[in-house]
Length: 142
Image 1 (tube, helix red, strand yellow):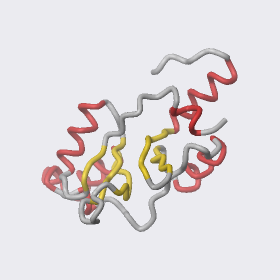
Image 2: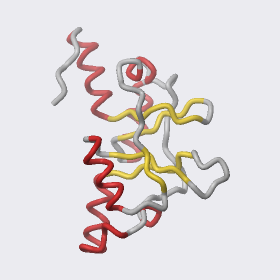
Image 3: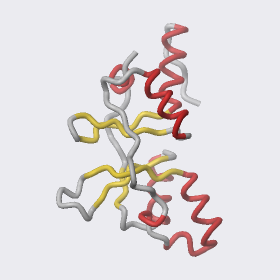
């Protein structure tokens, strides 16, 4: 099974946050969209649309632990490591993506095809696809 097989069943919308936004804005975006991770985009680069990292619920917790109530004013760029974005393509196998997630201890991967962000795949997406392949019917979202 390939990542693209899963993406065909997902809505194509990807929620992003810019590096210069605050943790408060990022948390509101996650809450409003009922998601636990955002793709971080770099507004400094000339193209302004480059995925550079992921901002997750874990980052919100880390911000609160380190900065207390002032965490809502901390910039996303202070919390996101942009050394090397871990990503996949729609032609990668689910097994490869699971390996990446396990090796890097992450639950969400941006899907980038031809240098363009197309989606985000989560460990939950993979588990649901595997369940569907085994059982033959789509599983209800929890």
